Length: 107
Image 1 (cartoon, rainbow, N blue to C red):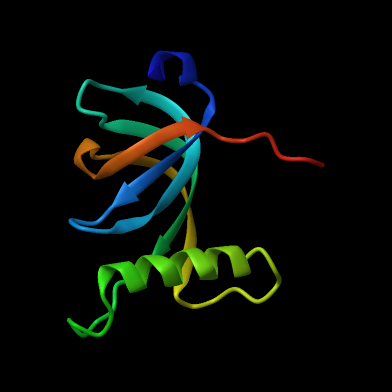
Image 2 (image 1 turned 180 degrees about the vertical axis):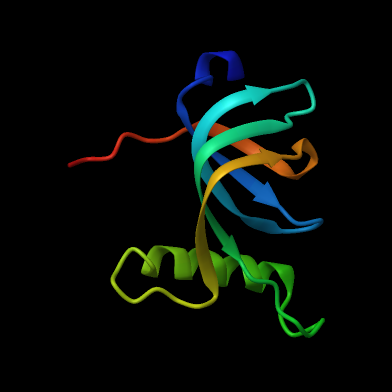
């Protein structure tokens, strides 16, 4: 399946140990059987973990992340969800949850 996506834009959902961390969108250059991947022109959207343990449960963090991600499509971007761009990244396969082709954007 991933062979069909080489040299194409993909979205990769990543995780913490016990919760969703965020997503990476970039061009898939290489991968191996462990799902280690090399991506180019990457945009990462991720959730900052609460500093105090017990401040929020993992479910509350994920619900808040999704809510803020939907709201960030409007002009006011929340500080809870952060974004950054990288030219290239090597992603370790043990944090990959899923990989899919980036949806076509309407102009």
